[in-house]
Image (cartoon, rainbow over all chains, first blue to last red; front, side, top):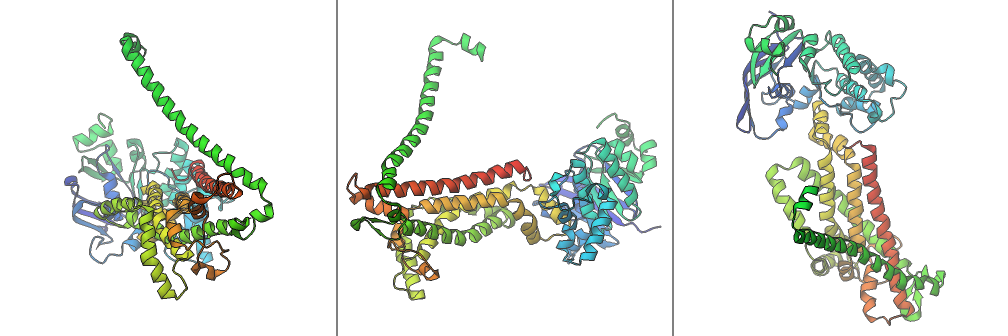
Length: 252
Length: 303
């Protein structure tokens, strides 16, 4: 049995007195793409934000259970949250270039980590932009403002920004929801490339995308994990009736 | 709408018409009053600029009794005190805004915000009195200067008065920075301070410069406080030591002398002339603030 990269163990999560995640347990394997899918309101994003502890910022929440990364409980006392977030990158639904140039955006995380070596920065810049399939489009205008890029390019820039830190895990929250089909395909293609080096957890923006990407898939409904397993099985022969109804488009 | 009108009794529709007309007249009369005030200012002030030689106008001595109307010490006095006040208020204002918006827990914010708004409501004469009886003696004793009524004292009180405006405008600016920016920075392993320093503040930069401009506008137009705490000596504020010497501002000059001036005299026109200068200065400060807003909108970088 291979050790999972991330283990979610009996997690219950309440926000403002209302349980939004109910006793969730599942494993995420290294170097795979795991999709968390289901209708809106299923708290998929909450799970992503739990893995890099971004939920910490929300007031009035209560959580029980454990989240393990490489066997370590990331909610244990004394965890260096900033270091954890460098290991676990995240890309958001809306492309969010920070104020500044393309170069500054990509190297932002390195700057925060205190890396000033020029060689190292240049290498990281080219590598991460290449991995995000953006290098050829921007290599001649690295010092232009990032907001001048198109929406699709901005989103790939955000992926590059996360990759510059060489995280072990990449969390993506509907990364293509604002993109056109061509940009979406580019992003998906780069994800397939990336999974050899990274563990990818994605909340897709459609069931079709979920089916295209999934090595493993977890189906969430109203804060409950209904079914979890290999993508090829879930989307062709789901065991649970509700999963079947959802993937065949009868509700959702 | 149309249906309503035709079915309504005639008295109601004429009532509507009358109300609408009154509101319209009131609205336009406000614009009219502002224009009239401006025209009056021009009518009374412009003669100063052609009845007096330029050398006199831009001289360094303001002695109306001897027909010396050098406005330079007054203009520089206003500018010096405003600049020093903004330099003092800016770091405090921004830091307070950052604290309220980014650091303080919800309940602290709920207490602080109304308190700061109350601060804005303190009459300037009260602050002037406080400056006169508390700050001025303190300045005199701790620094060993001849009088506590100085640029520095004036700037401290003005900074205090400009703070509420600056804090609320800067806080609004921080508030418009999308929450996602903070998430994005934090997700890359930024600490809270790094997020504020590298993401939130740069994104709110234009709003913060607007806060500075509005604070400046508040400070340069202030009259009562500066009259009470700056000593009112029309001397050129040159050199760093001038910071701890008395000064006289444009506003204080107008307020102090207008009551005793002979109507229609050069001195009378000179006071209105200073009013025009003040108006032009504030106009440009407001213009700069408006430009900051406009640029922010045009760039669209701040959503």
